[in-house]
Image (cartoon, rainbow, N blue to C red; front, side, top):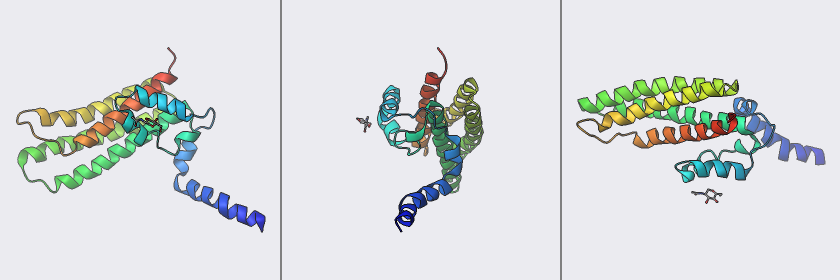
Length: 186
Ligand SMILES: *[C@@H]1O[C@H](CO)[C@@H](O)[C@H](O)[C@H]1NC(C)=O
């Protein structure tokens, strides 16, 4: 009876977690663990420590991750953000009717498709520990998102409907570059 209770209270929740996130768990190596202090020091180096607290530091996978794992986590957060933004671009496009707004968001749609490809490649490169390639991919992906942000600053200047999303991608990329900088030899 006691062992059955143990199974239900401990093993079952773990199996449910495993079933929900198998690829993420498999992607993270369990060598040296990233302690909270390490993640905090990485967050402090970033432009927006509060954002880092709410994203990377708040991710449940961080506790079991080493530096290589942290890079994978931050890239996967970026891929998720880019995917989410791509989806909202598609729905916003259906709601706007002005020509300039449509054209600009159309450029963003292409930018985000390209960015998604770059960040997915960055994840594969990070998994292969090809960190110079990770830097290239993250920069190229981020530049696409910066392009999407900048087209709204041309004449006539208009407000981008996805400016917050763009900045989220840029901030997540910064976190990846901070982590990768720690991994690469100096
Ligand atoms: C981030 O979280 C840590 C630990 O919870 C806290 O000490 C720190 O003040 C937070 N930083 C910001 C900018 O919210």
